[in-house]
Amino acid sequence: MDVTGHTSPDSRSGPGREPRKAAGIRDVARAAGVSYQTVSRVINDSPNVREETRRRVEAAIQTLGFRRNPTAFALASGVTRSVTVLTSSTTLHGYAATLQGLEEAARAAGYSLGVKVLTPEDDLDRTISAAAAEGGGLMVIGFDRLGATALGRVPADVPCAAVVEAPPHGRTPPRPAVWADDREAARAATAYLLRLGHRTVHYVAIPTSEGTGDAEGPRAQGWRAALEAAGVTPPEPLGGGGWDARAGYDEGRRLAGDPDVTAVLCGNDDLALGVLRALHDAGRPVPEDVGVIGFDDAPHAGYLTPSLTTVRMDFQGLGRDAFELLRGRLERDHRPAAATFTGTELIIRESSGGARA
Image (cartoon, rainbow, N blue to C red; front, side, top):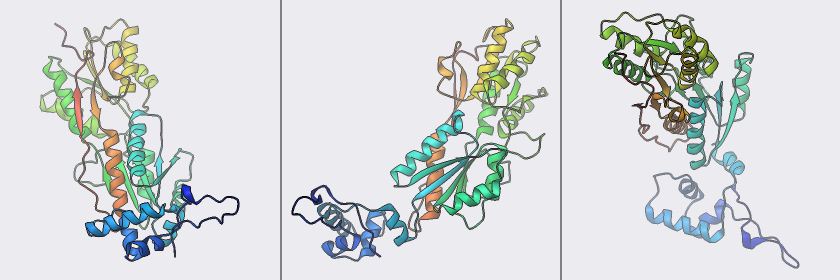
């Protein structure tokens, strides 16, 4: 089967001129003196092509004005260059930044990217089947329970990869996945507050991807580990039911009423935003009276008053590396590079301050 391209600019039809047929992959092969399979390998960046042959094919492509038709290529090669992302959110910072990384990597590789937003009301099996029926591969953002459940429901014969929470020790995700060590990052942030002189650190949790209501996510586990290593009995964590500033404000009001609260670690920056407002409303100045640290380094974190100390997460890097994992499942000749995302970093700003005298 020929994989035909679009008509080049100089092939326009006009009065008295027959329309020129767009160059196909076999035309390129004849011009370069190679097989059409070799042309296919060149346009898909396969490493198994001699450099001199690659240059000859690329020169023929340029001369003939060949442009690969994605639909025809998919039919000829069996590779559908599209990916569908399953996610429960496109607006929360971590999800949006991960999607950005996925989109950048997909575009660079010549793939189209579609997004299906999951809701609790969905029939997950039907949603996954419909997404898989479109061809290509599935990418799951499994930061929450809904995404993690969807990942576990993807049929084994469907190419799939994921971005997930750091899994519990000794367990691996059901499909190829990447994650950041936010467990260690939360431990380091908590230890930093303890070094400032706080006797304990309270925690406002994000929802966990684990299925049980009393399960702790990796950030809560890191917070707990730091306190226990310092010989401090962890206070009861708060939250866990929401991701947004409203949820943070509600928990912040509870914390503000306790004079023993002098340091708070929040599961994300939106929760921290709500906590900061609740403390302000209660007359508890930050950082003079209470030190606060967020998580994720959302774009607004550095512009709050006070500016927010937070853990920077490279979500875009996670998205790029997750796409490479999936591409390795879709293309037999593609060998994913080693993960390159930079991990986590504690960004010190004003809100953590120092301990009260």
